[in-house]
Length: 545
Ligand SMILES: [Zn+2]
Image 1 (cartoon, protein in one colour):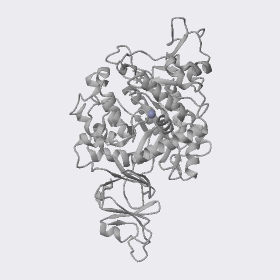
Image 2 (cartoon, rainbow, N blue to C red; image 1 turned 180 degrees about the vertical axis):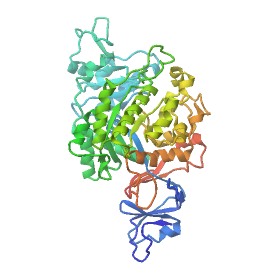
Image 3 (tube, rainbow, N blue to C red; image 1 turned 30 degrees about the horizontal axis):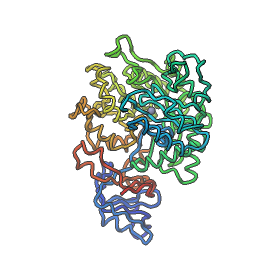
Image 4 (tube, rainbow, N blue to C red; image 1 turned 45 degrees about the vertical axis):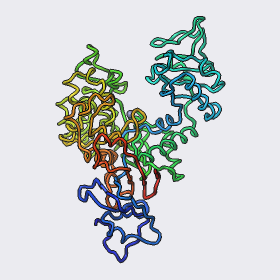
């Protein structure tokens, strides 16, 4: 048994005991156990059922795990939490297989929508309809009336506005088309409600920003969703400061059931620095002290910045972000943010963008010295082989989302060519080079469910079923490695490895009981595993069946 206080005589009793569990601690000193004792927010002992029973008192709540797997709670190192929560509330149209069903779901959404708020989201797909034609406002006007509505096609490149939305945005027959966009019109020149690409901005300009009430509602939805998936901590990339205010309000009310590390834009680094906030500053529930930047775009839109042009688009190397124009300005900002003690986390997807970020991190270490800053590259998707060693030497964390590999892996090779695809989503290479991996999802870009992430990391089986043995199988990692990246690795990425990431006496009692033991399953089955119980700070925040 491992315990904080070996003196049995003076030992207080536990507030919570989880017993009869297959405990996988992620703590290399004692990887397995049967039971855990908790006092208030923290774990006090981990050991055999008999050992832990000694902590039982009259007030102790006991959870019998029925032999099921108990893991440390999952820590998602890269989410957009409030946006994700807002999306949960939105109408879901992707599988509406007929226009009639589309209109029915819209009508139901109108009933749920407070007066004056917009109906957004949707992600409809008219190719699934018996007659695959773009919808028009005539389909939704009768059910939406005065509720402004702007629902997107699943690919985000076109969207349907109702008459109320067109009116608020001032779009009519006289509105000229915008460069890079189309206002679809009927035979007499009136807008049909469909706006394409750049024309969508005409409507987005008219949508008011979230109210504090909407933000709290979105955050509450996200918290509930996270708890149901066994996620006990998240690292929110690019929150608005209003999101942090919402978390702060929820924390005060005791409603923050997921621990937050908020990582605002690097361009705003002074806002944190001027009040003296440094990395990981705050409480166990809500912390600040990092900044997030963007070095380039994405592979999907061919804006990831690459050394060589895209295989399917010769002449296009991708794009550096606005923040990198020129790179020296980014370097100077990050240099100052590092001097202020803020942690630096930068989105870089293309091999050249990653390389340029390593140059900047190298300059910062040369000037300020290495003092455990924990720079992170977010996504780190397509690596130049030459850069793994440097990545490790500069102590940079690879903050990655395994789901992207099985999603993008369907088409990534046509864009990259085989040679360059070899070091894409290269988890094995990172670990073999001694780089710390921190796993997450980028929710709502990818599903928040960590089981899907673990499945992706160990199988690399693309979603289209075309790579059952794994796409670039050399880069698969083992399940213990993937679990570690999703717990200890993510905790390390937010300076919380002493408080989180493993089931160890003294750490926060954030734990999850799963429906099945993922270590006994075939890798393909991991994605179907459900959460039975989620515990945060010694309290049950989710109980499934
Ligand atoms: Zn993101």
